[in-house]
Image 1 (cartoon, rainbow, N blue to C red):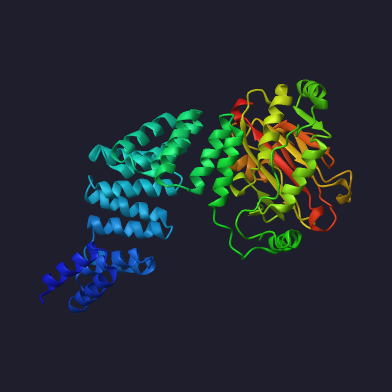
Image 2: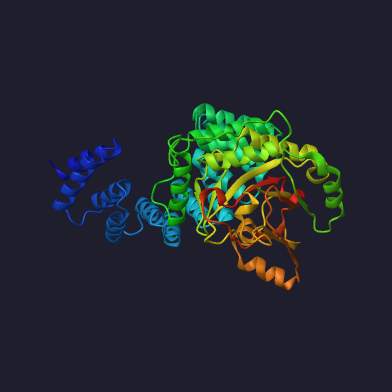
Length: 493
């Protein structure tokens, strides 16, 4: 067989996705013509498709030494560099391809994708706009342009881009999901819910979509329905892998002993209790006093004792001790339970609704945004200084007082200064040094709220806060547990 026929056969196999056959034929071509550009370049593409990016980079790089400036090879070279996380070099390769062919839509599209990976959404939008000027119905450019505009907080433009993409392909669940996320930011909750439902029709039982649906229902004041969606999401979520740090393994061994044969800690979702109560969950006795304190507080912080009714407190302890919802591990020694893990019992929905009903002066029209629980290892530290993405923060504690070895501590430290509104989430929630420097320069003062079982601290969620020093007894039932609920949006507090 002559080389031209062999090349045609190799390319045909490649186009049909027969990578092993294409590989064999390209190698045969290279054996016959070691300096041939095309088989070396295309073998590099095969290697990239096989996930062998280092080999792919060498092959395509050698092909470009043979024939510099071939736009397709420069595009593929950039794609492999992007796969390897070498984004600046990938961008340079795409720009070389575009210098050779300015109307190369694929290079422009991948250039935009690289810019997004590099956290340069404005540059990404510019590349996608150039793609769309050449190919107005390019679905990928429309979708990724919408994502980049969302990152720039240009939500109306993002929505328009997603809508154009859905005209092209109305059966793309990911586009419906992204459209729903954008509509949620715009607080257009009925439309967001409809978008997530369209996505779920295409990807039934998708845990991520069910989770988004739960959030939108909660923000629509349909908390019980939202929590049902969270529980459904948890049933379809993959359990975390077994290789876990020592504090995780220590907790899981303790909980497994507590559960016995009823359920596996690392097994399917198991909820121990958590049903809605026939009576009240929150004790209404302090309603007027607490509301008055909130209005009078300059920093908007109140402490409530005897928060839950006796029945609700017992039910919360049972649920938190017996349910295998503690899926998130943190290096500082605490574990997290989130709605998408199953921390969304009907009892929690009842508590969330009763907060707003009993304390309207505090919560006003703020909907529930999110909630979680943390369970602590007393041999390690708690949560470091941060603020939260909400208007009102509720933090309440349920472990019995006799577990706390230091009654003057173990609770929460709250400062009287709020995170600046121009700080992004990573700065006020993930960067410990910046808040401490800010608080020092502002002359901020802190208040320490000692731990008490069934005590709640309600405060402006923008206020910096951290877990106080923890000294609790050993033993599973003595682990400090706090429940946090966030209401409203940070910029509307």
